[in-house]
Structure formats: structure tokens, C-alpha cells
Length: 136
Image 1 (tube, rainbow, N blue to C red):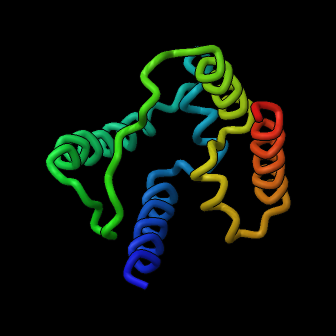
Image 2: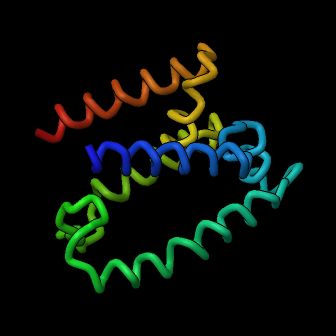
């Protein structure tokens, strides 16, 4: 129960932060990515604020063995840059640039019941399942 509550609070906080920062607005994100057109640099402040929270947290987590939920903290075992990582990053970047959403903001937008956001998330899940099947 405690872990479920922590996950719910963290998810709600993350979604609220994305919404307040403008990251759930695809037009704003595309404007940020449009470096040679009508560039909107405001999301750089959102990302900078996220780094101010994240970087110290990474250092703090190295001193802990358990997460607040009680589960074991582990670092990823993969350290090499391979074709799977690069191709996944390229596909992620292309999708982000085309529509202006990445997975977090897309899921945060589901509450609007907007058919575009629903189609985006369904397509994302289908893509994840196809990739999982293809790499198995």
C-alpha cells in the first residue's frame, strides 16, 4: 500500500510539473525544437529546473541501498553504447520532433480524452510491444 501511494504521489507530481512547465503542449515543445524558425527557448528553463532537482538526487541515491518505497536501488548494468541504444534514441527523437510529445507528457495528457493523445499513446504501446517481440 505504501509503495502504491508513493508511486501515485510521484506520478501526480511529475504530471503536474509537466503540465505547469508547458511540456504537455505539443506546439510549445515543437517551438522549442524549432531552432532555425520561431524558436521558443522557455522550455530550457523547465529543463534547467529539472536538472537542479535531478543531479543532487542522483548523488544522494548513491549513498542509499533502499528506495523510499523499500525496494532495492540498483544501477543499470549495461554501460556500452550499442546499435539498439542509438536506434532507439534516434526513433525517440524523431517521434518527439514530429509531434512534440515524449512518453511522459503523452500519458499525462490522457486525462483530456483527446483522440490525438489517445492515438499517440496506443501507437507508442504498440511500438513498444513490436520492438519487444522483434528483439526477443
